[in-house]
Image (cartoon, rainbow, N blue to C red; front, side, top):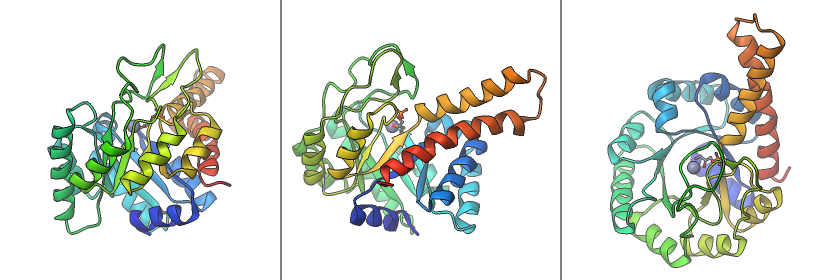
Amino acid sequence: MTIKEALQEAGAKGYALGHFNVSDSTQLNAIAEVSRELSLPVLIGVSEGERKFLGMHAVAAIINALKKEGVSIFLNADHTHDVEGAKACIDAGFDSVMFDGSKLPIEENIQKTREVVAYAQQSGREVFVEGELGYIGSSSALLDEIPEGAGLQMTTPEEAARFVRETGVSMLAPSVGNIHGMLKNAPEPRLDIPRVGLVAEAAGVPLVLHGGSGTADDDFVAAIKQGVRIVHINTEIRVAYRKGIQAALTENPDEVAPYKYLGRGADELKSVVRARMSLFAGK
Ligand code: G3H
Ligand code: ZN
């Protein structure tokens, strides 16, 4: 299955695929196991920092090996801020690239995103390019407050239509009330569901909902009904992974076998991934 086929199937059946960010191969293998267990395709995201730590070619090689084993798994170069970085990921065999020009003036965002789309088209492979419109914060972390400027300029249907028309992106990440990261002491803001529907219709391409951690389940369900086809989750699985590792080391402070304490982290992470993927798939 290609990423295009996976998205077409999600569109036809009205569900969304889960996209989970990873920093190491333990997390990646745990997510692949859940994908296999639920028989659902899954996307793995590596942002600039994550792929620098994990190794761009190393992660591409693991994904290819999993594909050969029959796992419907796709690799996304998440939040790529420079055109050269996006091109390098296309060359490395990634299935998709998210060019993040959300902090740039719209003209520059369009021009750079278009350059990435042109490069992907010349690659000789099917590489999807996602663009982002509207700043929604930038870190998958536990937050004291909403980051300055995040969510202030929500995406309008007019901007979405223009952006897709002028860049040729295959997917669009809008600002619709979603925020990267998770507030420590307050519930997440609610999504603007009518806006999701209007933006999806105007864009005419699958919408990608970033900043999924902490979002209310009924907001997810409503947004998926309106055209969200991929949901990004990072902070929630970072928290779960760390919680598992911490519990394992607290219970056995002398443990030095990484597969034991990391394994506990992976178990916690899998519970979150299982619950999120099932919700997004309407299971
Ligand atoms: O690209 C990554 C995501 O948008 C993750 O956001 O940390 O709020 O789940 P999150
Ligand atoms: Zn994101």
